Image 1: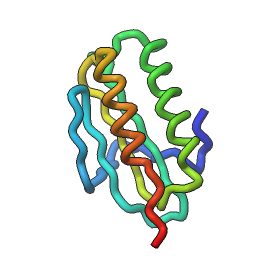
Image 2: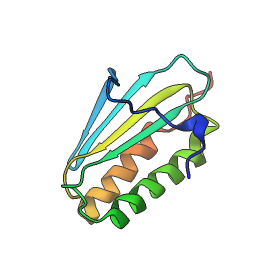
Image 3: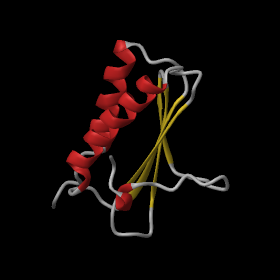
Image 4: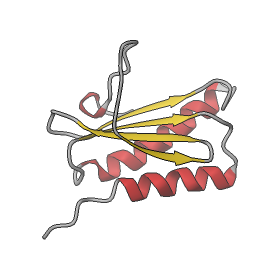
Length: 108
């Protein structure tokens, strides 16, 4: 489970404006936050993955990728929205896009 400090609160009046990365099966939105840790929110529609087991498995995999990189990330909010049923290739694209997005900033 994703620790509380890394969770992005998704309240009904939540709006995240920022850089958008489009994917075949969804969207990734990233925006600077005013805290000191990066946060992640994952939204998977029931239309995309009808079984809760599949939705939770995808969330756990995304949370695992995020936690592995979180200590080296700058304080940015990431929201991943999965809109359509991802195929195996789309899963790979999603994980690669997240991996690229979550690269630590270059030290100069």
